[in-house]
Image 1 (cartoon, rainbow, N blue to C red):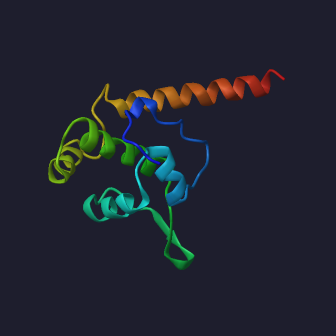
Image 2 (cartoon, rainbow, N blue to C red):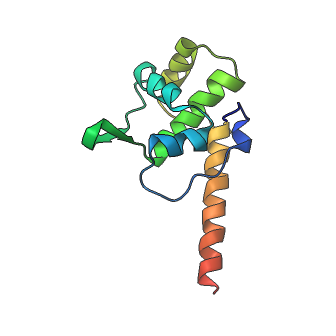
Length: 120
């Protein structure tokens, strides 16, 4: 069902506050068990846990997962190398990285959606 794809081919992130692990799995093309494993390996990933230990990810978590995915699947880093890369950049992606481009693309889509709603 989920195939490795380029971050540029991933679906846009909806304008919601919280996402379930299933939704994040679809948005990031990563299986849920991989997300749970990454939570153990990357201290930056801390989804909110509610009733029954259910995970709820926020937008910044989804963006971080996409960055981790890019480091591991596209740039060829190991888990340790990706962790180091994220730590060295103080949890901020480098200027011009895919995450910055994705954020700008997402913002543009959301602004166009708002503009179309306002023009009705």
